[in-house]
Image 1: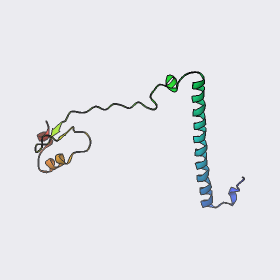
Image 2: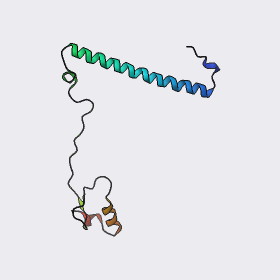
Image 3: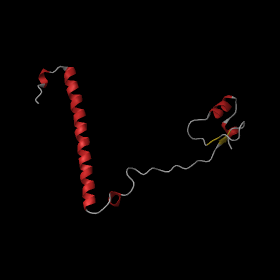
Image 4: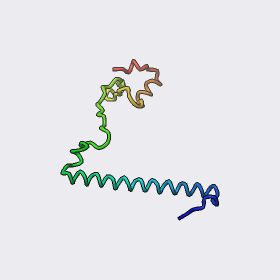
Length: 107
């Protein structure tokens, strides 16, 4: 299929380019799938498992996040605490608006 691009206007040319990019991405994905299948077949033919070659974790290892000790406590309700990380809780903002200071709410 030969396309004479000299006879296309601006919109037609942009449409052709976008369709070509979509098709290019589709072809790349198909090639990746075929390559992955070949690699798995080769590993299996040699008598190994994927995990033996590449390890059990696929992708990046996730960092474990532990809990952080609370730094502030709500004087009206001692069960409500905040570590000082992330978005401020409503009770913390309300206490600040009422005239309290951060050090007054510190544990």
